[in-house]
Image (cartoon, rainbow, N blue to C red; front, side, top):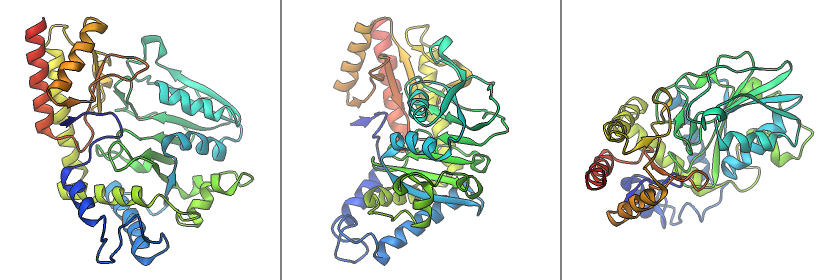
Length: 353
């Protein structure tokens, strides 16, 4: 099938085949990666190599820490605020995931919207941020999977920025060093569901609270090299495989070029449809990762989704909260898959317009 699910999402076939081949015998150990001790030298080498690959791909400076934490993005909504919200925290209101982050922070202090795109149903990225005095950090969601918007110009503020990059991390070349903290659930672009990759500047990490349970302190994961308890070994392993795959493709510049081409194939069909397909996001803020659109009615959208499934296009339904249609184009989605779904969309339009 052609897999356009918004997450968990496709992995490259060659990566899946490599995982399959190593599942019973990882590097000659006679054990699969999910069977061996997380404190073994074999698995410790996976952790160290994974961090090294991230430093190289993201061009991170040495003043960063990288940790791997169970629970995915939802756990990070809790942990970031529990650690760093001392007085108040600002949230860029670009949709549902920003709300979830803000609402988690409200348990620990004042959490407010620095801006909001609610007035236009989250179809754009607000440019300005209103930051109150004594604000500890600004949280942004770099790509909004539900509404199909993405940051192309990041806020300029005088406080630390925490980025939820769950759905567009390593899909393009940006200056990752400008952010004080980056985290991402890896199940969209970088591996199997169940873990968040967390990258912190060392100076920012030092501002975290230490009067909270050890398991919820970033300090604990840094000091114990992500092995305070049994880490999510399979997730780290799949992340390692995906980083090698990105490098094999030619690195982030090639990945970005390909993602531009993929998104253009679908947006061109929408833009040339004379309103048959109605894109949700304004053009300047369109996401390359999640293309969201509507047809003339809910019934027609239901038919489109059913016909797509009959043609082996899976996961083109919109999020349950907003309906409509969505095509997700994460790194592992191929150009051939995009060409095929674009041809289907054009044929469907001709049959129904």
